[in-house]
Image (cartoon, rainbow, N blue to C red; front, side):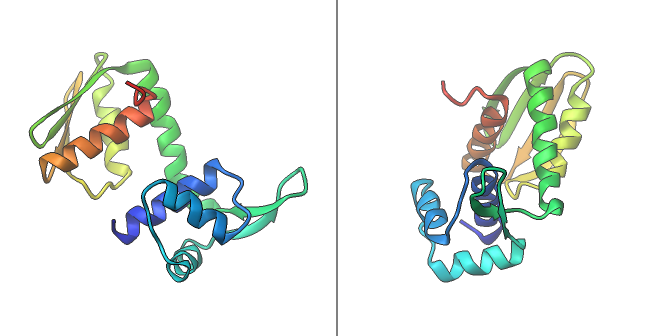
Length: 156
């Protein structure tokens, strides 16, 4: 696990949970397979510029600055595209192949590139296929898993 992956996970956990303390965040990270020291969490939170705010129900919890939410909106757009236009996602060696309805692959490829996942070496998009080039076969499997999570098909 590298720093970028860890910080992305922290952002995702803060977005999807009402995290009130670093101890809660550490437990959530641990449940996701990230065993991180309190000092590392503190440094990551400073770098991400996490701040505490009160929610409408009066609970003080961690929130992300507005510039961090840009990737979140890309993922939301991808979720919409995936639900409407994806036919299948499969792995072949170091490649992840996303089959789409005609005319959608270029937009999906563009959004995939904007996520800047470290596992992606490049993206090639045609009319109805998006080819994600990964560095290794295990990274291709990770990318497929992330794509299935975005698509909402990760339960299979």
